[in-house]
Amino acid sequence: MKTCPRCESSIDDEARYCSNCGAPQTEPAAEEFDEYVQRQARQVATESGATGDGVGDGPARGDGGESGFAPAAELTDRQQLWRRGCYVAGYGTTVVALTLVPQIGAFLLILGGIAILPPVRRLTAEPLGRPLKREVMAGLYAIFVLLGAALLVLL
Ligand SMILES: [Zn+2]
Image (cartoon, rainbow, N blue to C red; front, side, top):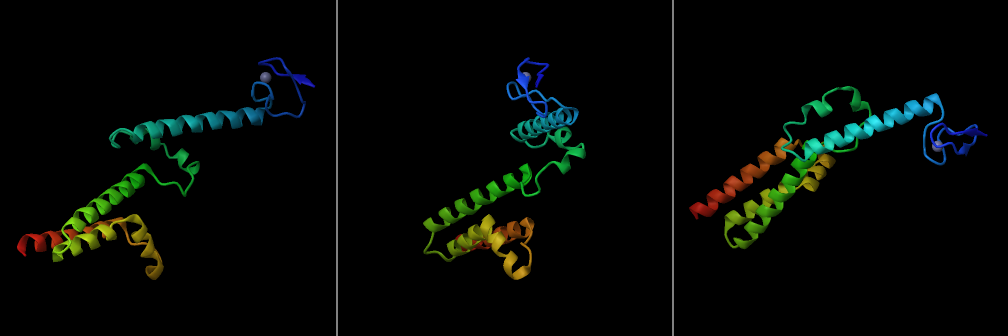
């Protein structure tokens, strides 16, 4: 048995961390702990940057070294923002269009609203091998909405 230098409780000789206060007991454990703390700090910095306007968060993520830590499956702030925007635009357009439904233009608006929903974009991956670009879906949305609006005004 040895004693933890921080809290002085007896701990196992093999222990990497103190079971009482959690202080790292070996050199590798200390390094690991340091890394963990830094990673947490970076994450907090990135997240707090995202709650702002999304413009001023350059320094928090720009140091290159951290990209190895970020899980690849996680969406970036920008992607999440885009995703949320797509849902809002898609549902908003569809709901408005439904109130106009007997008119032909409303159906185009509904198509546009559906086209921009993120799950639809994922569906395009099946026949095409990979999903259409966000810009393409946004373009489709714009075309449908413009055509629909034009028909609503003209007819
Ligand atoms: Zn301790």
